[in-house]
Length: 133
Image (tube, rainbow, N blue to C red; front, side):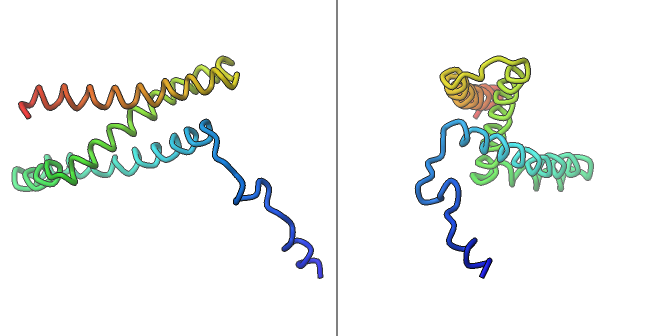
């Protein structure tokens, strides 16, 4: 009997009418990029181990990283790094007590997204230019 009473109660906020807010999407993305950076560290460890194991192992890792899928992973990892960095700086301002007003939080959120995209593009353009393609 008691179970029936709780089964009919609506969820709060109800999932069918809930609209994600911009700031909540940014917060979830910050957590996801933290996980992506942790997982991407495994790729870095693989690369370092291969470098220590010799030329053949290193060449194998380099071939993987230079493939389209490897470059996609590296691009995503670099975007995650810059997003997490920019949003971390935003959080430092919040820790100091600045930027809690809704308009300011939304503007700083857009600044984080733009900064992450711009820094990623600049890093890849500079990296590809320096390497020669």
